Length: 447
Ligand code: 9WN
Image (cartoon, protein in one colour):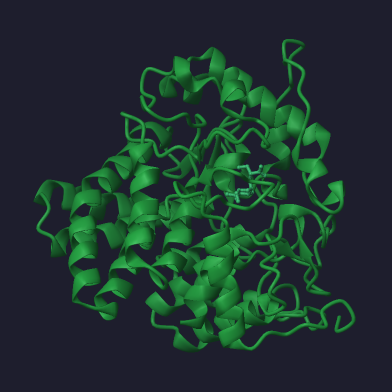
């Protein structure tokens, strides 16, 4: 592996490079997710980016989250993309056609789906950092937290109102992009049931031209399905009830459900501190408990791994991926299940695999058939996912484990390229470089 990665920056040099990536990706209005491949604001990227920004400039961190929430739909949904006027990304705002949506925002163009609810976590982190950085930052961040709280609450309420159909208690997604793990093998079975119709308007991908090797991106077959689902939603006028009722893809996402549980906890803590309405606080406690129970209830009786559920067929999806460790993020699984998951995580099937350059869990187990070390969510390691587990472990009081993941995350990224994802054995950066959220989580680890 040394051959491919001759460079190892010292921590101060790495932090300086990370800060430069965030500055360079700043258009003045938003920090784009990546310089060429992703020239817009993405929802969960913006949350992580604000955490990194808080280490540099609390005002700028606040502005980023304010910009995202200015694009919040009137029904509460936080859209997965807020478009800039750059047209280098496909599908752009015209293809999404959300202008027909009744609930869409008026002044900005957005996509018509959402992404994982990590925003309360970001607000909490920005506030904590600001409180340590000085009285002005503290006052600004407290004002901001009060101001954004009702918007966060509305976003969480939207997920409960529109996205917990049926009895599984899992939060449902209507497109793999909503999971943030687009082409994860988690979605292979449900995508097999998506049949792009003849009415799918033709399109030309732009992403494959912007990466070193198109094989690092999803396939054309996958893109046909991604685009077909957009077509279905467009035809439904982006009406949520219609979409959840009819779309050809409806899956209970266990990873989102776990993040939702812990985000509700965080939002409840913030709301308690800032004296928000008791009824709303009670809602959050209730939503967190239900989400946690749904995650625990999804665990496989033998492996202990948490599972997604295809809500169109009612079948559990047994594909083992990083999402199987979701109960470790939010807690609530029985002790024996939790122990099983922790030892699995440490084993050679996951983070303990001796061939990994950095001992952090890949998106899919290197021992699983179909594992692809170079393709997107089918094998590579993703620094943001490592950050989420290290953050959650710290919160749960598992300091040693949190530290190990943080150190592994630095090992993975110390070449200073800020890859979108990494080949787990060689540490080669893949997808985009100078990816904003990678730079942001590295900054958070280093400060
Ligand atoms: C589609 C921006 C986003 C991330 C996702 C990641 C990737 C987009 C794409 O990039 O998805 O939303 O075009 O591949 O999978 O998690 O938010 O970084």
